[in-house]
Image (cartoon, rainbow, N blue to C red):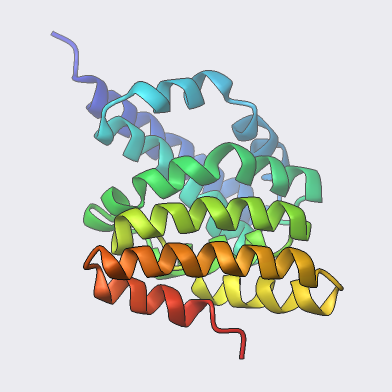
Amino acid sequence: MGKPLVARTSKQVDNINFLLEILLDRQMAEEFVDLWVNQGNLLKLHERASLMVRYELSRVSVILFIAMGTRKLHCCSEARSGLLQAWFEPMLLDFGWLQRCKKGLDMKALEEAMGQTLLTLSLKQQYVLFMKWFQCFSRNGSECPNLSKAFQIWWRRSFLRGSETHAVESSLELWYTAILVLLAGYVKNATIAIDAFSIW
């Protein structure tokens, strides 16, 4: 009888991450990013797979996000954008499981790296992804990565680059959601959220 799907997936991910670390050490991982971004079938599988299979798939993305955020992996803007467009939401969904079963993963480094990678995108792209993050945060709190530092940086840049109208509109939306979280009784999460959206 064959091994369960989760066990087989975990073994394959271990092998992939082992090879990926070698590529990163030799500064040869750029093409791997393109391959990972274009894994449409895996993304579809992620949408309907069990939590543990999803978790295993996201372990690959963790390595890439950390490598990008720490500048161990240098990619063109299209590759960074593609990685975030494809795997940012799956990472938000799986972050809680990644925290529970780390398998040697540095979750603080992941949070920092996700924020740093986000900040390399255009302000418009950052806005879209920060909105997705905040929706996740307002629902799941600590089950979602803490990107508040990166959010503050994006917020200030939006003002400095003449995006006052855009920033004001996003501010109102974010404050409204934070207040709803507070009213719903998630006092700790709402307090963190409101603090994150203070610009000074």
